[in-house]
Image 1 (cartoon, rainbow, N blue to C red):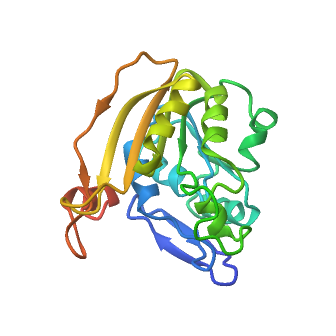
Image 2 (cartoon, helix red, strand yellow):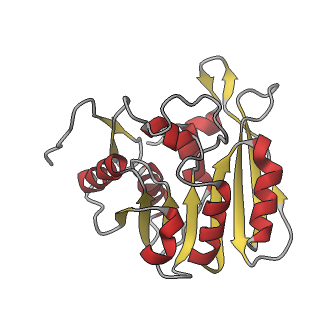
Image 3 (spheres, rainbow, N blue to C red):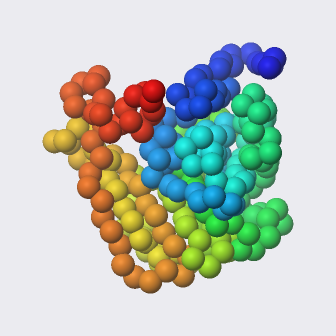
Length: 248
C-alpha cells in the first residue's frame, strides 16, 4: 500500500501482527504509557471500545492486534493527529475494525449515544496548571497538560458512555491517585484493579494503571508492581513481552 507521508512524518513498526503507525516527532509520538495501557486493558470478542484522546491511534491499533475485539473508536480533538490516525488505520487495512472521530470529549453526548461502549480507554494529559508550558496550543502541550479537557471531564463523560458494568481503563501519574479514585467513585465508576509502574525496583512509581467498572461493587485488586528496567538501558523481560519484542 502506498504511504502518503507529510513533512517530518515517519512510519514505525509496532512489533504486533506487522502493524505500523505514522508519527511526527516534531509534534508528538506515543510513549511507553500507551503501550502499557493497551496491555493492561482488555476487550472481549464483539465488544465496542472507545479510546479518548487517541492521538495517532496507537491504543486502538495495539489493542486490535492483541485482542481482536469487536470495533474500536478513537476520539481525538487535534485534527492533525486524527488525520495521522486515520492514515495509520488505512495503512494497516483496519478500516472495518477502527474508526477515528475528530471531536471534543466535552461534547460526547452530541457525538455518541449514551451507554454505547463496553470498554473505554484513556491516556489523558497528566499535568495541571502552567508547569512547563510554553505555547499552550502546541500539540505536545495539549497532549500533556489539561488544556482541552480535565480529569473530571474524562471520567464524567466515560460514565455516560459506558454500558452498565462496562470497563474503564486509564494510565496516569501516582501523585494524582487520590483525586482519580475520588472522581471515579463520584461518577460511579468503581475502582476495581490497579497496578503501579516503577522505572527501577528501588525507585518510586511514576505511572499507575487503573481499571474501573461502571456501577461495580466496592472491591479493588492491587496487582504486583511492574518494573521497567533491570538496569540502565536494559528492559525487564515483562516489558519486552509487552512490547512484543520476544514474539516468534
